[in-house]
Length: 307
Image (tube, rainbow, N blue to C red):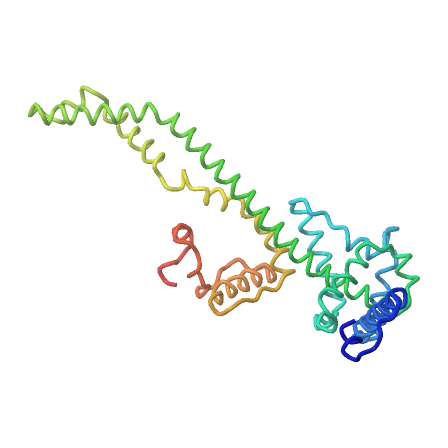
C-alpha cells in the first residue's frame, strides 16, 4: 500500500488487494521450495524419497521412526537417539541448505514435515516434497543432537546424585559403627589430659582406661571414618565406570565437538577418550590433557605430577 501511494496509484478494492497478497505469498513459498530443492543432488532426492518407505521389518516408515525417539532418560534411549542421529547424518545433506531460505520459512517447512503423514508427503509435488523432507531431516538432526546432550547430562546427574547419596549413607553407617571406638579414643584423651595436669605417668593412666590393642583398633576405625574416600561421591562414581563408559561410548562416537581455543585441552581430552573407546585400548597416554579437571579429582588421576 505504501508503494501504491508512492506511485500515486489508486488503492484497489480490498478483495483485489487480498488476492494480490495471497498470490504473492504463494509465489514466495514456491520460490523457497525451489531454492531448497535446488540444492539437492539426485542421490539426496532418492534418499529423501526412501524416508517415506516402511522401515525394514516393520510397518512404520523411516520418517516416522526418526520423528519419534524415546526421550525419557535411560541408557537404552540414548542408544536409540544416537542411532537416529547417525542415520540422519548418513544422508549427508549439506547444512548450507538452511542458508538458502529465511529461518522462519525453514522452520515452517520443518514443522510441516514433522506433522504430515508419509502418505500426504508422497502426494506433494516433487519440489515441495524434497524441500519439506530436507528441512525435516536437518531440523531433526539438530533437535536429536540437543536431545542427546540433554539426556546425557540428565543420566550423569542421576549417577552423580546416587553416588553422593550412597557415599552419605556409608558415612552414616560408619559413624554408627565407630561410636564405640570414638568413645575409647575420648577416654584416652581425657586420661592423658588428667595425667598431665596431675603430673602422673601417662602410660599407666592409659593402661587403666583401655587395653593397648583395643586402643590401636579404635584409632584404626577412626582413621577409616575420616578417610577422604569415605565421604567423597567420586569413589562411588568410579565404581560406576562400566555404566558411564557405555553412555560415553555412544555419546562420543555419535557427536563431534568443536569450540574456541580456551576449550582446546577439553576437546583434545574428549578426542583421546573417544579414540580409546573406538580402538579398545585401555592405557591413557602420558600426555593426555587434564588441566581442565577440578582439583577435587586430581588425587584420583594417576601420574598427575608428570603432566
